[in-house]
Length: 88
Image (cartoon, rainbow, N blue to C red):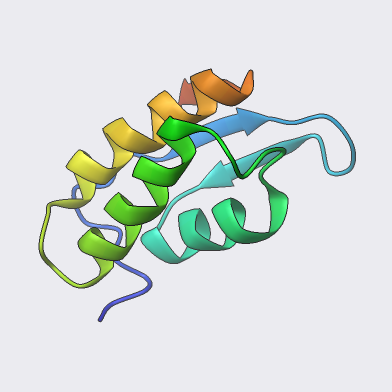
């Protein structure tokens, strides 16, 4: 398992309620931490799919970008604004 996989994972900026209000998710480890500790709701269908996809990506069963798609759907379900982070 590689918790800090960042290759092919396009970073996502999230706007949350509370402190800190903004987070950037760069790795699968960041995403796992976010889903477990900072997610506003843990009972949505897309949330459950994102958690499963995160485990699958960490274990190498799916590509990190496939997980990212599930993560973005879960963010939308939870009302979390998500932006692609572009580095120049």
